[in-house]
Image 1: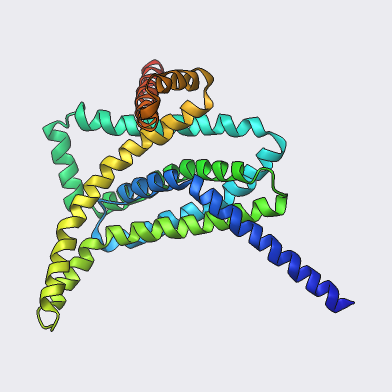
Image 2: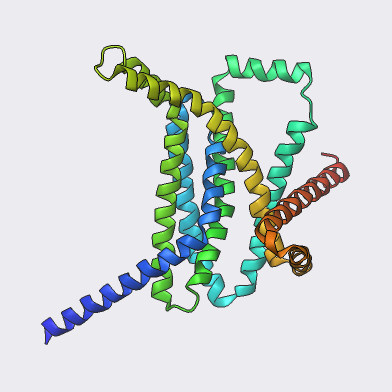
Length: 304
């Protein structure tokens, strides 16, 4: 009797794991677009630190990402069970924050000119003050974790939507498995990207006394040339991702914006995907600028 009960329990566990694996695969496909944005954003966020601090920074952000998901998964399950409407509100707030960060980067890049005194002060801080470098590093980590929180929230909500009809245990299994796999995968790739130049330099040094010198020299040079180009590309893609993800959240969750997007897409249905992407990007940029303007007015009113 005990053996039969044990076999039944094992069978139930196997069936549950099979359901979790199948639904995790579906959820991963639906969140693939956000995962690409997550990778680009985080590689961009952790770039620019001292070479010997790159991996510690990636590890610090990865730990923050794990903590984000440890908070978000139970919260999403509880909100979905008791206050499902709140998920939409939180997503919109997160979308506006992403749009604001993207707009701030663009405005500062193209319209804000550093004065000679500001540039001199920044160079002096970078050259002479370890304390300032530590503070800058901590600020980068905090910013990356904040951005990860919003993207993680969207990933979890999308994944939750794919398993909404499943039982509670399956939902917990799918969200937990997906959160762990995503964090390891994304930050593993980020670590690889930021250390490309170091790997190239290592191969060049190893090529001096090696029978595979030409191949190592070729790969090393290719990595050294590709690394800065890739980081610049990811910086641009990361900023665009803020507008696309943030604008996409607003488009899908605010009625009048969604209707406007549908009307525009119907004008040329053969270009529906391109129209949707462009619309999301423009929406994100406009929303980000609007939030920046609102913050500026509030600061002026408060005298800060």
